[in-house]
Length: 104
Image (tube, rainbow, N blue to C red; front, side, top):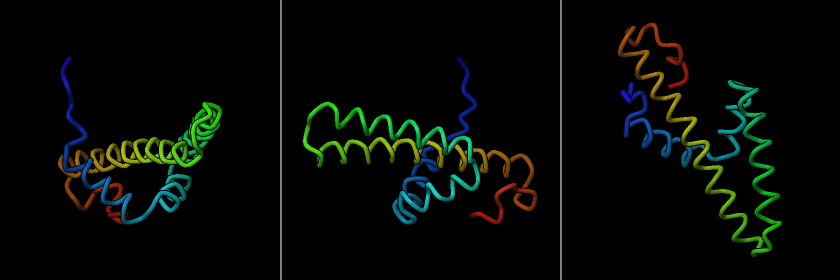
């Protein structure tokens, strides 16, 4: 299967850096404003994961660590896709026409 290679290692590292700098809460708030349907789905899934982790009976601290790691994975993936899309758009249309030029 051919790949369009939309998400580069650079986009992933940029997403991880952004998440560390901005934080989980602010990133989720931004996502809620930009993609309300996606963020709603993400919140529902994360709530279900958190509930299930706690139901496993492990320590609450370890459950919270696991939950945060899953949240980080989801947010980095979404941010990396957005950055990859932005880079692709920029490469195709030039920086002056970029849909996210005000956000970077």
